[in-house]
Length: 172
Image 1 (cartoon, rainbow, N blue to C red):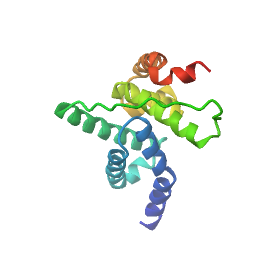
Image 2 (cartoon, helix red, strand yellow):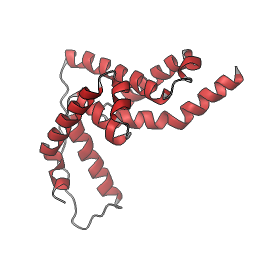
Image 3 (spheres, rainbow, N blue to C red):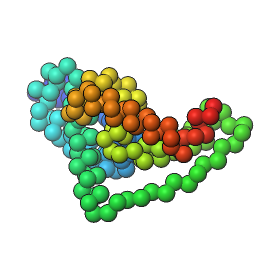
Image 4 (cartoon, rainbow, N blue to C red):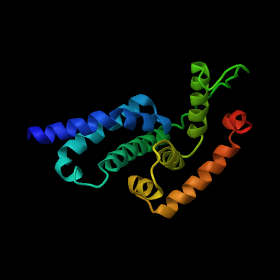
């Protein structure tokens, strides 16, 4: 039992922050993401012997987290559509990519642009480009066909290209 606990602890310890980061990048509030990750870990612990034998147990956890977040988002959307106004960020001309303020502003713009996407497209973009998952792995995490991942990615990229939040960075 100690070896199982150690394996589980090592697995979770090396990936926990990444799972939270992906959920936040996908546009969900950090507290909701942390709750979803904890719920996923509870499920994972109960099934650890079986899940640890998977080729990609990380994908299983991401699938549980994303499904939990989508269910929660659907519940909230039914109650009331949450709108979040994002103030425009102005950039100083001398700011560089190494400037922390520039990085924070860019991060806010990317999050604002991602939040404009439908949840399924947002999750697809985050998994494909922020986690660098293949189309097949993304499809496995989301529980859809690879063709669906391709079409969601195409639509999401077109929407992001037309998004006003990112115009400043597209012109570079």
